Image (cartoon, rainbow, N blue to C red; front, top):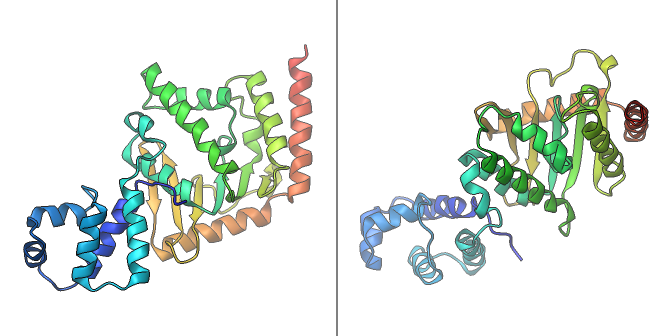
Length: 286
C-alpha cells in the first residue's frame, strides 16, 4: 500500500500542469465546468482533487491507462491524512516536507558531526537535543517534537526498511548531550543499531584530519527507481534546507563518498563504539 505523503499532492500538481501543456487554463476549466481558480489550486497543490475530478481531467488530456493509474495513486496519497499530521503545528514547513520524503526513501545516507542522527536517538538524548534548539521555548512544542522524532523511527521497521549509511564524527561519541549517563545509554543504543540488518554505521576518527564534510552535516535521500531524483537535506538554525539540482546532489554525494572512505570500516567502528560505551560505564560507576 502506498504511504500518504505531503509531497504527493505537489507531485500530482506538477504532473497535471505538464499534461496541460499549451492549453489555456481557462479553456480547460470551462470544458470541465470548473472555475479557473479551481484548476489553479489543484496544479499548485493548494487543494486536493477528488477521484472523479481527476479521472475527468485525465480523460480531457487523453492520458493512457498506465499513466492514469500512477496519477490516481498520487491523488489518493495526496488526499490521505499523513501519520505525522498531529505534529505539524510544532515544526516548520520544511521539516514537514523532510518527514514526508524520509518516509518514502529507500536509501538514507547521512553525515553527522555534532549529534547522533535522529533515527538512532534514544528518547532522553533526543529531548536534550530538542530542548537545546534555538527556536524551542514552549515545553509543549518540545514534547510534540520529541514525539514526532520517536515516531519517525518507525521507518526502520517498515517492510522493506530503507538502507542506512551513517557516518558519525568521533566527537559525537564524546559530546555529553544530556549528561554522561544519557550519553552512555545513547552509545549503547548505537552499538545495538550497528548490528541491525541494513544499517552501516561508521565512525570518522579524529585521526582522519581535514575532510569534505567540515562545513555542515547533511543527508542524502534516495527513492525507488523511476519515482523521483535524490534529494539532499541540510539542517541549520533556521530549519532545514533542500538541495535538489543534479549538480548539488552530486557534490554532496562526492563528499559522502570521501567521508565513507576516510571513516573506519563498520566492524572497527563497532569496536570504537563498544570501547567508548565501556569507558562511559566506568565513568558513571563511581
